Image 1 (cartoon, rainbow, N blue to C red):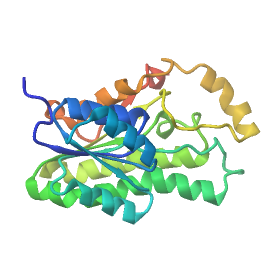
Image 2 (image 1 turned 180 degrees about the horizontal axis):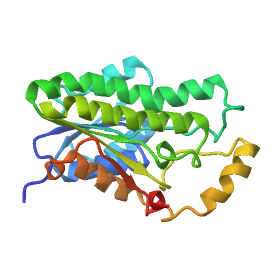
Image 3 (image 1 turned 120 degrees about the vertical axis):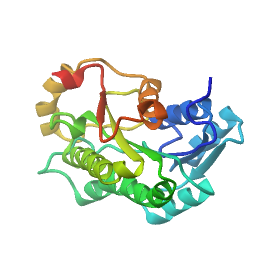
Image 4 (image 1 turned 90 degrees about the vertical axis):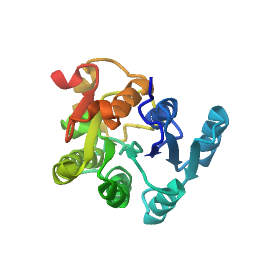
Length: 248
């Protein structure tokens, strides 16, 4: 059987750990040449050593700055068929009265602005070829207010809006844009509770979360499917992968 991504190039952000690493491995298994980015060079070195394949290109960079985006796209060395915006950071669960500018700016830069810049960078080539697939990783926090702090919630809700607007604009020209909305996942993302108010208010709702903690591979499977031709009729969809949490 033909693998989903034979002969195609995919960019994956946050590729050194968690959902990003699982997505890199799934794309490679499906025949893709993968360009993986992560801010942690050691994680990428371990990934490359574990994979041991010339089909993997690793790029240590900070995608929150334009120079990092430019370096990542340049490393692709040609057309990009698939973009998976996986990288993300949390916000300490800080609510509106407590969030500081540094937290707000960094979370929005990584979770929203970086995906926008990467989408902007790969779209011209996709449009020229008349095909391409973009998958953004948003969150249950983008669908409800009881999951995270203000910055993370705003960043993931914005990513949902960006997904839908870009899908609407470019779908007729062959570029599909979808998103996966995970619930709790076993990843390396640090999520300390830095607000007593958030702990008191969010705690009871987090305690009744449905589905438990997913494995990164479960999210990678959703991302790979959305990026594949198997999902050729799927565009502008926000796919919850949360064990049923979004059904509450």
